[in-house]
Amino acid sequence: MNMGILGSGMVAQGLSARLAELGHDVMIGTRDENKLKGWQSSNQKVKIGSFAETAAHGEMVFNATNGTASLEALKMAGGENLTGKILVDVSNPLDFSNGFPPSLTVCGTDSLGEQIQRTFPFTKVVKTLNTVTARVMVYPLEVANGDHHIFISGNDTDAKAQVADLLRSFGWIHIFDLGDLSTARGTEAYQLLWVRLYGAMNTGMINVKIMK
Amino acid sequence: MNMGILGSGMVAQGLSARLAELGHDVMIGTRDENKLKGWQSSNQKVKIGSFAETAAHGEMVFNATNGTASLEALKMAGGENLTGKILVDVSNPLDFSNGFPPSLTVCGTDSLGEQIQRTFPFTKVVKTLNTVTARVMVYPLEVANGDHHIFISGNDTDAKAQVADLLRSFGWIHIFDLGDLSTARGTEAYQLLWVRLYGAMNTGMINVKIMK
Image (cartoon, rainbow over all chains, first blue to last red; front, side, top):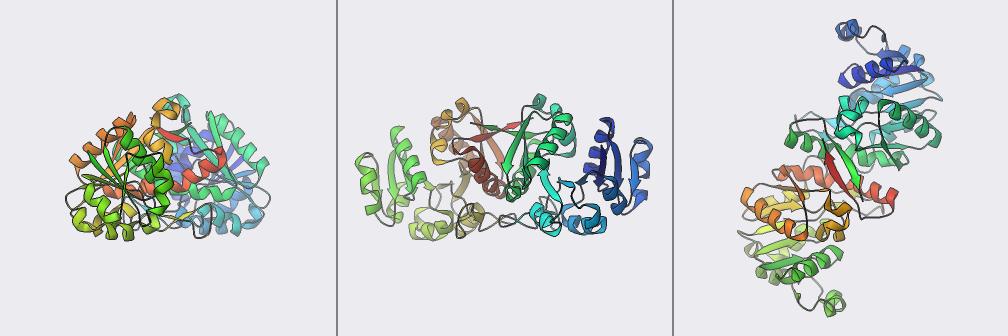
């Protein structure tokens, strides 16, 4: 499948490499191609493009940009290149302007996922993977043999099912459908706990399992 | 041990009944004693008092009031009745003014736990139990035989150790010390995910286990 990954950081790189490994035709989109030249030398199957080229390339598009820059990056990608497509939003509205630990640019009454959905009403936004670190997103079996949960939020049931299939191809076993996109308020706010778990455990190779 | 429980809702009632069951000398504190008359008829070992009487009674005091009313309730309890004591803060800054699901009155840059600590600098505030429903707080073995985590945040190591001992007496097995009281920002914000888990699972008899 043609995949477009918006972003040039660790999350975008990790998603791109893993999707290419799984046989997808992947383009990674950046504002500055020079940032990715070194990385691409060991990931030659991944094409590099502008935000707009990458969104146009993808049958499914990933928002893996920094949360504070996501809306601007997606506008550069262009609504016309996102119309009718699934946009997998893995970003978080983290505000590092006062250093670590971060706060959130939006909390409780709205979410970045919903902001993106409102900005691009003809795109099917599915929020997922934003509760784990880049490596765990695409290699979930490396934490507790996969015995932990990933959440999924979105307004389109069929889009969520397609994304869940992709998650299973990464190795995800426990996929928890939280409901409509407003439930992204929950997973985004969970970042404030995640950064504290990371601080206490000194590793990001962690996740939660829902117990009942 | 003499225990003072501030609040008259399900959380305060559940804590009071469980502590009395475990042999503690418990007083529950309320603004309106009539609210507890019916409950007390089947919990006769628990005394009822004003906020101030209850705080004075407790060698350890619990804040189990609604988060939006906690600072006011604690001021009524009186700083002089809390000085030098451990205050176990199980409340959350939930804002239900727009119905369910709630938002938070404070998020990311501060926490209710820290607000309480700043208001009562001579009290040892320990935040815990705020990530589970009232029943799970005191009967943790009823969820997955206790195979899940409870978090603890506070600035005083000895106070956290004493509270951890009390948690073990409830049945808690996995007690996760997140660090100083600022880590309460994480557990309080987690409520936004918890309410969505509750909505999706249709039960509050749930919790998370940290996997690595």
